[in-house]
Image 1 (cartoon, rainbow, N blue to C red):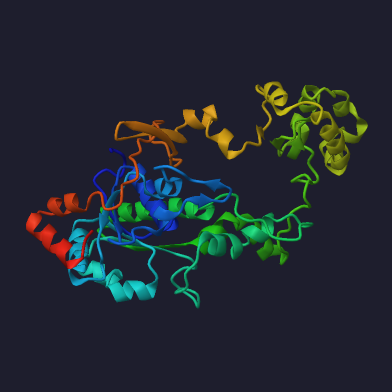
Image 2: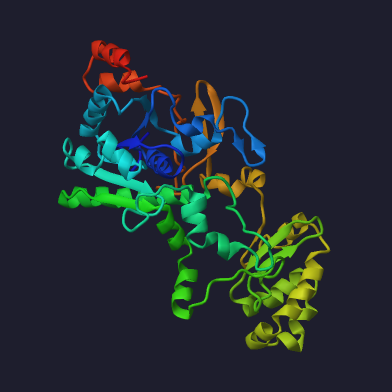
Length: 406
């Protein structure tokens, strides 16, 4: 697959989603991503078939496809001498080494920075971790629920203040997917610098760091005020002083999401479109200051008006409205959203004469949807890659006999 990363080889020694998602993005962009899996266990996610309320049946596996499309799978036991030698042979031909193994495991397996740079001094070495390489928790493992969501304030800051509990991430691998994009961006920057200066960087991205960045404005506000970000009570408008920023329930129990930061600019037309033009003429809302001061009164009237019609009615009413709004959609609706499709957010993949759709990474180059390859079968490309390295079937047989490859 051609793309801006065409000609770049990425050697990925990782599993689960956070770091493999970075490899998937790079593969979307045209890189040759070699996914190393253990010959007997493979990536642990290959057996994950229960996603929240959804049981995955059949041949497809959305978890594996999301983080591993477009890659080649090679089964190597890097803990064996022969397997480690093969891994280093591949590293010599690679531009990037990508891993999420913990420091002790990297040291034990001899795949840390110095080990890989000993055979390829110009390789970009990229590590994804839970909490970053420095500090007391640098050697600890974690998932996006812990490092990204819980510790980085996402969970506390999105939980309604009147809820006795904590809000979970909105979907599986939510923080992992954002983190994977961040890793891919860091690798791209490092490759760019190497191209210009010859310097090969070590790139570190943590789920904690990605989470803090995602919450950056709220954390910065805490740095200024000393106060934590507190979510509104359940059902309250997002902005209590702006009636045109929040969520409104429709008659079919759906929602409109409004985000008109210049509320007074859009207020007259919005009121007219919902069938209450007289509200805009009310002296309580006659200026920006008055609308802000009396926002809760306007909100109550708008809630009652919007609740009289279903979502589809309002989609037609606001279709050509300049104010910023959107229907609140579920994942099944997003999967068929024509705007998502038009911009390559979901693309069709071909494999073995069959086609299926998959979410693509969100960068367009030259306004052209990405061309994605399918996720590899376990160990699908092991022998192919060894032959590409210039070895022969005698070595393949010897590696199989020693248990170094699958």
